[in-house]
Image (cartoon, rainbow, N blue to C red; front, side, top):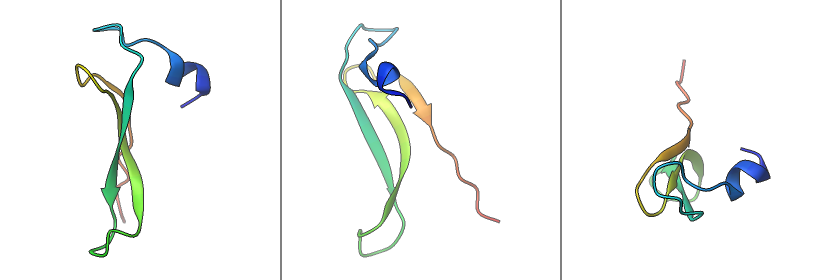
Length: 54
């Protein structure tokens, strides 16, 4: 996601606050990968990463 997209307002509620949700990769909670970037107010999903393992 580019900087301009991170600073953009939410199309649903107009908020600029976003939250990065992370998926933990191990039981020690030491490694994580990005799961989704969502609006902090309404939960609109801006970007979703779905990495499927082979």
